[in-house]
Length: 138
Figure (tube, rainbow, N blue to C red):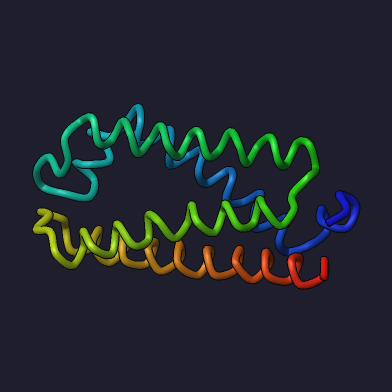
């Protein structure tokens, strides 16, 4: 996709929003995970290293997204990778919410489910964008 075309598109705006959101969430989970845990649960939910891994992963993904935005080169491979990066946590979080006993506050559990559904929809949107661009290549 040409950089002039994409900057006006919904795809670009969503990608940009997702980039900022991942910067925020990655920073929160890496540096302020105890605050986040106290906000959503009544006791420590995960070992410190897990929060560090999740936060670092989000920040690394945010850096990659930022370079894609700054270089104005968001193409089909960016959408496919973003789809995968939305769906992997979706499946992991779905499993954790259904099968693991976390001491989550009720409001937090509802909010996390809403966020999880958002990740699934976001991944589907990225997949659609990838498919459209792939289809136009042929």
